Figure (cartoon, rainbow, N blue to C red):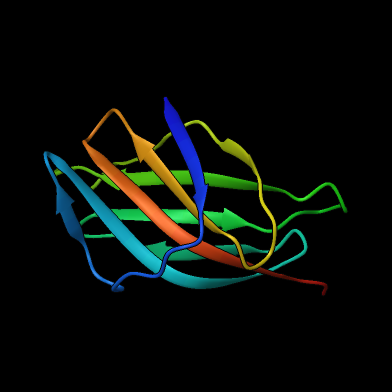
Length: 108
């Protein structure tokens, strides 16, 4: 389960702890239409962001985690409607973490 907030502030591109939540700031992320971007967000965690395949502005986010046995677990995809240049924050209840990024959506 995730929630997202759209804002306009700029912050450091490093993890920040807010209460019990770790927030990973990915900065500006360039996304091409329908092309996945693989981003590392800490030890054994990654995030896959896929740019919109149409003009509807929907991107797909998938979180992955590798456990001690090196088995990769992928969460269900999250669909987000974004606007290029507008910051997005996604906070996840599971794992007490969040991701902040500013999508830069480009055509192929």
